[in-house]
Image (tube, helix red, strand yellow):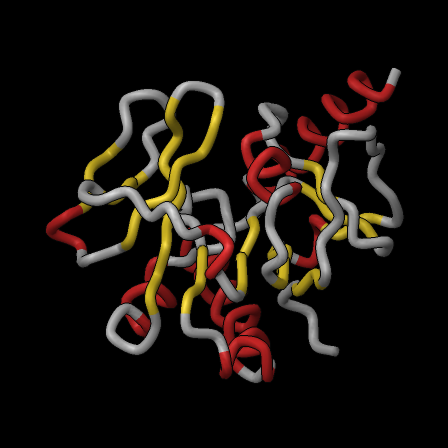
Length: 182
């Protein structure tokens, strides 16, 4: 039952995303990252994990490039059914993954996940109780379950719902930030 609810919400959000141009999503993304940059936890953070966005997600590339020389930026890489972590060392060291078409850093494994201060987490939907609905593979849940970092879910305002179905594997966020003003 929960799986069917999750699938229905994923379909609904994917359709809504089509109503917004890439430029509009980039503009909304700037509003989200402006809020993140004001957080004390972000200002103090030395190591940030973020994701290299797809065109339908909160756009992260500008943010990553802005902070690449100010903070250590860690990006996930899909390996089998888990995420491994690698440091972002510049655009020239990025490749497009065969499995999902996501930009991933090449280079050395980052194996100090306990040192990450803030994790910026994508999701298809979040709710008012800080629950997250991902794409359905539980990649992030497996990683987040073991982390003490501040978990910040990011999404466009139409992706924040009253509630999303959750099960025992889903990990709550500490904060969810959208492009609507607070």
